[in-house]
Length: 590
Ligand code: GTP
Ligand code: SPV
Ligand code: MN
Image (cartoon, rainbow, N blue to C red):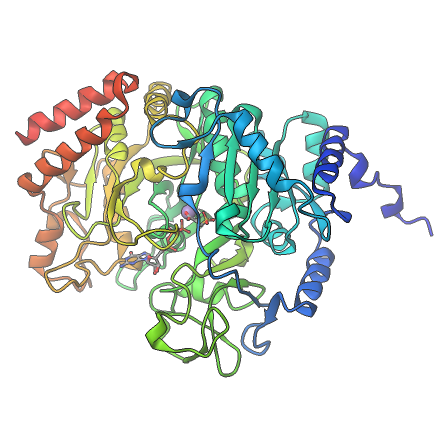
């Protein structure tokens, strides 16, 4: 029967460049079969059925969680591995002190040894994908080759997979090559290598999120940040959200917080009842590509199409949108189970876990029931606050950029940079307590400039210079802020209620942008006085609010001294403008 489908060029024949690369990878890996992914619902159904049959996925209670499944990763493969992640530029200086580096030849040789014959018993999946709206000039393309059907299912949700992407690759000729194998999931044989000069990625030995879904951190941040520098734009670890005020005006902001520090939650914030008339629209929850526009403003697209979000802490009180969103057609990774086979995680006030994230009977002495970095993968279109502007090929104009960190002390609730240049220092000053999103100790403060420490594909010194250069091109630059939702009191309790209440801080920023809100100057920037924030219906004591809005000179002198020590490791490559801004702040604190 001659249907339309038969008339289409087979995927394998659309791009000779992709086909040649696939053939060479097959030769190296000895893959048993090749599957070209079209990203269709039928493909998702077939792969899901196969994984359910093989026991790699567990179906969840269909009455309460229709279309949802659970994946359990290897117990030693639950987070990003920054210590095994490398930037392989020809010159080590180009990778900078912020990255682990390996010479490209050495890295390729090491990876070739790992990949040789690794897919003998496996199918090789070819995933052509688009990062960004398919018809946007700001979008970029990639092809991931993987032997993990779990990765395929995730990539279909997280990116735009299929024929349209491959057609654009065939006409544009440009794509990022990402080669991935789960190998034996052996942490001793695991590497995530990036070759920004070759636009390629090689990842072996992990099936987890940022290590394996190569469109996300590997492509859309590490490779894209490098490309963005040569092309005059920015690839950032930022959510993008539209805020509509009671007058009906919508402004978009982009916020960079480190991993597991509140981006997804802020991106789908629900306004508190005491702030009537506000509406929130999510454009993106993790990554923003920012381009200077002809109008002198900064324009942003979200390169992703889904969310790979932190599950623990999600509940109807903290984030009703997220809670509702993940009740159907969601892939859960490493959550616990209740007796009636519903997913369970810490922070839920209902249900109780009987099976832990590793599939063992739950025993509280062995730690939390759900892994602290357990995740949901879900299409952005399932988000009740999804913004149709997420599909706009032009992106959205950005009114404010917000940096933030998780700091129990020192950093106030919010402060405003004096201008773009000062804002670059504010971004470079971000420090944050480590979280379960990466392997390693949790809760220790580390420097995380622009929330990009794990994700910048080149030398941070050059990156800050690039930020100054981009700012110089903007006739109407966004204002820049710093926030901290995570201050604690002497009893270790959060001083600020966070979540929906964060809108009060964002509303102050937008009023500042419009010239309608007051502030007081401090050594580190401008802060709202308590009366500058809308506190109607807010349950925070006057003392707590004062503590949240105070800059303690002694602790800030210490902070800025640490900042200087940190920056000095970048040596003579450090932009003079950044040193100048640092000196200004030091002078104001003296
Ligand atoms: P990645 O996906 O790793 O990049 O994380 P993210 O930045 O999107 O963080 P997410 O919104 O998933 O939040 C991480 C954790 O912080 C979750 O357990 C949230 O419940 C919690 N959290 C988010 N926002 C707030 C807040 O305003 N206050 C407090 N106290 N906790 C928050
Ligand atoms: C993060 O760690 O910042 C994440 C999850 O968003 S991952 O995909 O693993 O990078
Ligand atoms: Mn992230």
